[in-house]
Length: 308
Image 1 (tube, rainbow, N blue to C red):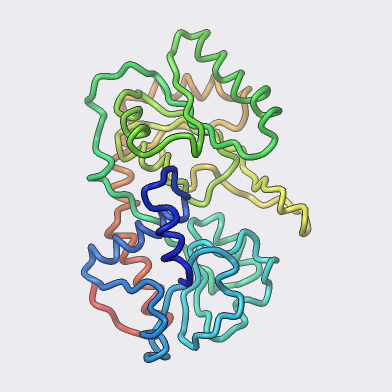
Image 2 (spheres, helix red, strand yellow):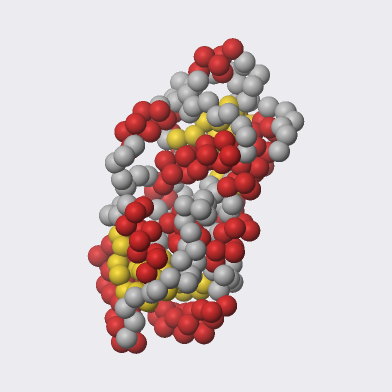
């Protein structure tokens, strides 16, 4: 986990922070909540205990010249595409590659095989309380994390959605990714009856899960493919992906494009009182389960038995 301390100090107190940083801190806190001591960047301790497993997480440069002999769990983070380092997992030190959801694991497993496993960052439901019963004055937050072809997608997706909401008399408030902090976001969630989540794809995306923890159901654009322009550097093949990789019937609805939005909106309002997104988060995305899942990967890497 080299240089994570520098990342921490660079980002501390300077919102907005990156999704990776939030996921890393979630992992650290989850492990500490489970009763474990977490050492960050303690290279001296690792060198004194070369058979003890370590976690390596962050950005690709971390692996450049990596010299510690310890068995390692890689991820979350590191690579956007396995073709960047196709022989990475041939290194006998690297026991497991952590992917943040199932579609991501299937993608990486084509190169790294059964060394790929899933893990999720747990949601702190105390920090994101239930706002279901709070007074509401916004029908929808539109959470915009569109990354590529913004002008075209604004014309073909965002504007038609906003137009349909206005036509039906629904109110909305637009939030742009990285243009808000947690305090502002939490306050807006308190006021909202629902969220329209716009992102090409996600490996986890804590923001929509934090909304669900607050009792806010989701209407998600889920077009189905990995659209990162990076794919064109490699084979360009279609890679199935999702914008809401942790989702179920109690969380809300999906729609593929602007044409499918009105019908999804109808379904959303028909079922709105039956949604239970916070219950989904508690059952499937808890910090306790996050810690247990990572510890299973960690213990396996070092062939250890850990009390849970």
